[in-house]
Image (cartoon, rainbow, N blue to C red; front, side):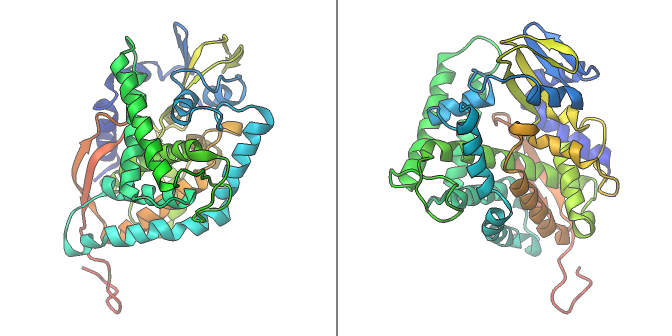
Length: 388
C-alpha cells in the first residue's frame, strides 16, 4: 500500500467522469492563471482566493453554482440575494450549522454508521457510496425537519445535481438536457413538498425541529443538493485513499489532522465555476466583466502535488480553501469535517481495504458509483484487547 497507489485510484474518478475538462486543467496547472478566450482559470492559492474575494461575482449567471441553484429553487434564495438579504440568509444557515446545531445532528449520522458498518465484522463487504448516501440523506432531512426516506432524498438530490451538470457541459446546448434538468429539479422539489405537507421549511429554527419558516422548499432543495452530493463524493474517496495508503492508525491518534488532509487531497468540490460581474484582477491577471472564472480548489490546496500527511498537515488556512473563502466560504464546513472524522473513526478498527471500485460517469462531482470495502481485522470485543 502506498500514497502512489491511493493517488492512482483517486485519479480514476476524474479520468472516467470528466476527462476532457481535467486534461485541460492539468495542461495549464503550472501557471498561476491562464486565459482561454473569455475564460480565466485560477490555479494558485492566491488566484483562487482573489477570484472569490476580489472580483465582484454574478451570483445567478448560467453555468455557475448560483445559476444552477436559481434554477433549482426558483430564485430569491441565498445565491441571488445581495446586501442585507444575502447576509441574513447566510447568518441563519450558519447558526443552524454552528457547534450546537451540528452536535444535535450528530446522533443521526452516527446511528447510520453504527448500523451500516456492522456487516464488516462478519466479513461482508460494505458499499461506502450507499452508506454515504443514507448518512447524508438522513442528516439533510434532520437539518431541514423533514420526514422523508433518506435514500430517496439522496437519490433525488444526486439526480438533480447530475442533470444540472450535464446541461452545462461544453458544446451545443441540447434542449433534451435542459428538460432533463428541469424534470430532475421538479422531482426533488415535489419530494420535499410532500415531506413538508406543502408548507415551508428551513434550517433557521433548529435542526430536527420540523419547523416551518419562510425559507421554503427551494432553500431545502438547495441545501439538500449541496450537502448530499459533496458527502457522497467525498466520504468514499477519502476512505479509499485512507485504505490504499494505510492511514487508518491516524484515525485513532490524530483524527482531525487526518480528516483535514484527506479533504484537502480529495477536494470533493474540485472547481468552482463563476462569472465576473465587474472588472477585477486574479493574481495580477485582468478580468473583464462577463468573463467566466474556473477557480480550481484542488490546485489551490496542493491536492495534485502534495500527499496527505497527518503528521505534517498543510496550514489550516490552506486546507480550509476546499470550503471556499471570505463571504463565499461554505457554512457547512464544520458539519462536513465532523461527519468525515466520525466515519473514518468508525471504519478504522476494521482496517478495511478496497474490494471493488467503479467510477460514476454521470455524477455532478468526481465520485465513485460503487466503493466496497472489506475488513482485514475484527474490532476487539470487550475483554479482548487484541482483536483478530
